[in-house]
Length: 148
Ligand SMILES: CC(C)(COP(=O)(O)OP(=O)(O)OC[C@H]1O[C@@H](n2cnc3c(N)ncnc32)[C@H](O)[C@@H]1OP(=O)(O)O)[C@@H](O)C(=O)NCCC(=O)NCCS
Image (cartoon, rainbow, N blue to C red):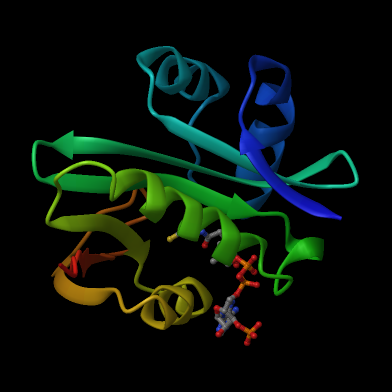
Protein backbone atom coordinates (compact mmCIF):
# COMPACT_ATOMS: atom_id res chain seq x y z
CA UNK A 1 0.00 0.00 0.00
CA UNK A 2 1.27 3.46 -0.87
CA UNK A 3 1.17 6.27 1.67
CA UNK A 4 2.33 9.89 1.68
CA UNK A 5 3.85 11.07 4.96
CA UNK A 6 6.10 13.73 6.45
CA UNK A 7 9.85 13.28 5.90
CA UNK A 8 11.93 12.48 8.99
CA UNK A 9 15.75 12.67 9.27
CA UNK A 10 15.85 8.84 9.19
CA UNK A 11 14.76 9.10 5.50
CA UNK A 12 17.69 11.34 4.55
CA UNK A 13 19.98 8.70 3.03
CA UNK A 14 17.23 7.09 1.01
CA UNK A 15 15.86 10.39 -0.31
CA UNK A 16 19.36 11.42 -1.34
CA UNK A 17 19.86 8.06 -3.07
CA UNK A 18 16.69 8.46 -5.16
CA UNK A 19 17.56 12.06 -6.04
CA UNK A 20 21.08 11.03 -7.04
CA UNK A 21 19.78 8.26 -9.30
CA UNK A 22 17.30 10.65 -10.93
CA UNK A 23 19.41 13.68 -11.80
CA UNK A 24 22.84 14.40 -13.27
CA UNK A 25 23.06 17.38 -11.02
CA UNK A 26 21.51 16.80 -7.65
CA UNK A 27 21.41 18.54 -4.31
CA UNK A 28 23.95 17.22 -1.80
CA UNK A 29 22.81 15.33 1.25
CA UNK A 30 23.68 18.36 3.42
CA UNK A 31 21.36 20.48 1.31
CA UNK A 32 18.44 18.16 2.06
CA UNK A 33 19.25 18.31 5.75
CA UNK A 34 19.42 22.13 5.62
CA UNK A 35 16.11 22.37 3.77
CA UNK A 36 14.50 20.17 6.39
CA UNK A 37 16.04 22.20 9.22
CA UNK A 38 14.73 25.37 7.56
CA UNK A 39 11.22 24.01 7.87
CA UNK A 40 10.39 23.55 4.19
CA UNK A 41 7.52 21.24 3.28
CA UNK A 42 9.06 17.80 2.89
CA UNK A 43 7.01 14.70 2.11
CA UNK A 44 7.88 11.15 1.12
CA UNK A 45 5.90 8.42 -0.65
CA UNK A 46 6.38 4.90 0.63
CA UNK A 47 5.14 1.50 -0.46
CA UNK A 48 4.93 -1.08 2.30
CA UNK A 49 7.44 0.88 4.38
CA UNK A 50 9.92 1.48 1.53
CA UNK A 51 10.51 5.09 0.50
CA UNK A 52 10.15 5.47 -3.29
CA UNK A 53 9.91 9.23 -3.78
CA UNK A 54 9.89 12.66 -2.21
CA UNK A 55 8.90 16.28 -2.73
CA UNK A 56 10.27 19.47 -1.17
CA UNK A 57 8.36 22.75 -1.38
CA UNK A 58 8.06 26.10 0.35
CA UNK A 59 6.38 29.45 0.37
CA UNK A 60 9.13 31.29 -1.46
CA UNK A 61 7.45 34.69 -1.33
CA UNK A 62 4.36 35.98 0.43
CA UNK A 63 2.19 35.12 -2.56
CA UNK A 64 4.27 32.44 -4.29
CA UNK A 65 4.90 28.77 -3.62
CA UNK A 66 7.77 26.82 -5.14
CA UNK A 67 8.42 23.15 -5.71
CA UNK A 68 12.12 22.88 -4.93
CA UNK A 69 12.71 19.23 -5.69
CA UNK A 70 10.87 16.04 -6.41
CA UNK A 71 11.76 12.59 -7.65
CA UNK A 72 10.31 9.11 -7.79
CA UNK A 73 12.63 6.09 -8.14
CA UNK A 74 12.66 4.80 -11.70
CA UNK A 75 11.27 1.34 -10.92
CA UNK A 76 8.27 2.89 -9.21
CA UNK A 77 7.26 5.52 -11.76
CA UNK A 78 3.79 5.68 -13.36
CA UNK A 79 2.18 4.39 -10.16
CA UNK A 80 0.82 7.85 -9.25
CA UNK A 81 3.34 8.46 -6.46
CA UNK A 82 4.34 11.71 -8.19
CA UNK A 83 0.69 12.69 -8.51
CA UNK A 84 0.00 12.04 -4.85
CA UNK A 85 3.12 13.89 -3.68
CA UNK A 86 2.43 16.94 -5.85
CA UNK A 87 -1.30 16.98 -4.97
CA UNK A 88 -0.47 17.00 -1.28
CA UNK A 89 2.15 19.75 -1.71
CA UNK A 90 -0.36 21.90 -3.63
CA UNK A 91 -2.95 21.25 -0.94
CA UNK A 92 -0.56 22.39 1.80
CA UNK A 93 0.55 25.49 -0.15
CA UNK A 94 -3.07 26.41 -0.81
CA UNK A 95 -3.59 26.86 2.92
CA UNK A 96 -1.57 30.04 2.51
CA UNK A 97 -2.67 33.04 0.54
CA UNK A 98 -0.58 32.36 -2.54
CA UNK A 99 -1.37 33.16 -6.16
CA UNK A 100 1.01 30.81 -8.02
CA UNK A 101 3.21 27.76 -7.55
CA UNK A 102 6.44 27.78 -9.56
CA UNK A 103 8.91 25.09 -10.54
CA UNK A 104 11.70 24.44 -13.04
CA UNK A 105 11.97 21.48 -15.39
CA UNK A 106 14.97 20.51 -17.49
CA UNK A 107 14.09 21.30 -21.11
CA UNK A 108 14.99 17.73 -22.08
CA UNK A 109 12.86 16.11 -19.41
CA UNK A 110 9.75 15.52 -21.50
CA UNK A 111 8.33 13.02 -18.99
CA UNK A 112 8.34 15.54 -16.15
CA UNK A 113 7.08 18.28 -18.50
CA UNK A 114 4.09 16.10 -19.48
CA UNK A 115 3.50 15.27 -15.83
CA UNK A 116 3.24 18.98 -14.88
CA UNK A 117 1.12 19.77 -17.94
CA UNK A 118 -1.30 17.16 -16.60
CA UNK A 119 -1.53 19.25 -13.43
CA UNK A 120 -2.33 22.35 -15.53
CA UNK A 121 1.06 23.95 -14.94
CA UNK A 122 1.73 26.55 -17.65
CA UNK A 123 4.98 27.61 -19.26
CA UNK A 124 6.26 30.93 -17.95
CA UNK A 125 9.64 31.22 -19.66
CA UNK A 126 12.77 29.42 -20.81
CA UNK A 127 16.07 29.96 -19.03
CA UNK A 128 19.04 28.96 -21.22
CA UNK A 129 22.08 27.42 -19.50
CA UNK A 130 20.23 26.95 -16.26
CA UNK A 131 21.94 23.69 -15.28
CA UNK A 132 25.65 22.96 -14.83
CA UNK A 133 25.72 20.88 -18.02
CA UNK A 134 24.26 23.90 -19.89
CA UNK A 135 20.80 22.40 -20.34
CA UNK A 136 18.06 25.00 -20.23
CA UNK A 137 15.16 25.07 -17.81
CA UNK A 138 11.48 25.55 -18.50
CA UNK A 139 9.95 27.64 -15.73
CA UNK A 140 6.37 26.55 -15.14
CA UNK A 141 3.66 27.88 -12.84
CA UNK A 142 0.27 26.85 -11.60
CA UNK A 143 -2.17 29.71 -10.98
CA UNK A 144 -4.14 29.05 -7.80
CA UNK A 145 -7.81 29.53 -8.44
CA UNK A 146 -10.00 29.68 -5.38
CA UNK A 147 -13.71 29.30 -5.52
CA UNK A 148 -15.96 31.23 -3.17
C1 LIG B 1 8.25 13.37 -13.07
C2 LIG B 1 8.02 12.31 -12.00
C3 LIG B 1 8.15 12.96 -10.64
C4 LIG B 1 6.62 11.70 -12.18
O1 LIG B 1 6.39 10.76 -11.12
P1 LIG B 1 5.47 9.48 -11.31
O2 LIG B 1 5.17 8.91 -9.98
O3 LIG B 1 6.06 8.57 -12.32
O4 LIG B 1 4.16 10.13 -11.97
P2 LIG B 1 2.66 9.59 -11.98
O5 LIG B 1 2.61 8.10 -11.98
O6 LIG B 1 1.90 10.28 -10.90
O7 LIG B 1 2.18 10.16 -13.41
C5 LIG B 1 0.98 10.90 -13.57
C6 LIG B 1 0.82 11.27 -15.05
O8 LIG B 1 1.87 12.16 -15.49
C7 LIG B 1 2.19 11.85 -16.87
N1 LIG B 1 3.55 11.32 -16.94
C8 LIG B 1 4.35 10.90 -15.92
N2 LIG B 1 5.55 10.48 -16.40
C9 LIG B 1 5.50 10.63 -17.73
C10 LIG B 1 6.43 10.34 -18.77
N3 LIG B 1 7.65 9.82 -18.54
N4 LIG B 1 6.05 10.60 -20.05
C11 LIG B 1 4.82 11.11 -20.34
N5 LIG B 1 3.89 11.40 -19.38
C12 LIG B 1 4.23 11.15 -18.10
C13 LIG B 1 1.19 10.80 -17.31
O9 LIG B 1 0.06 11.46 -17.82
C14 LIG B 1 0.87 10.10 -15.99
O10 LIG B 1 -0.37 9.43 -15.99
P3 LIG B 1 -0.46 7.91 -16.60
O11 LIG B 1 0.67 7.11 -15.99
O12 LIG B 1 -1.82 7.46 -16.16
O13 LIG B 1 -0.31 8.07 -18.09
C15 LIG B 1 9.02 11.13 -12.15
O14 LIG B 1 8.98 10.65 -13.47
C16 LIG B 1 10.45 11.47 -11.83
O15 LIG B 1 10.85 11.41 -10.68
N6 LIG B 1 11.27 11.77 -12.84
C17 LIG B 1 12.69 11.98 -12.66
C18 LIG B 1 12.98 13.11 -11.82
C19 LIG B 1 12.36 14.31 -12.37
O16 LIG B 1 12.39 14.52 -13.56
N7 LIG B 1 11.80 15.12 -11.49
C20 LIG B 1 11.18 16.34 -11.88
C21 LIG B 1 12.24 17.34 -12.14
S1 LIG B 1 11.75 18.61 -13.15
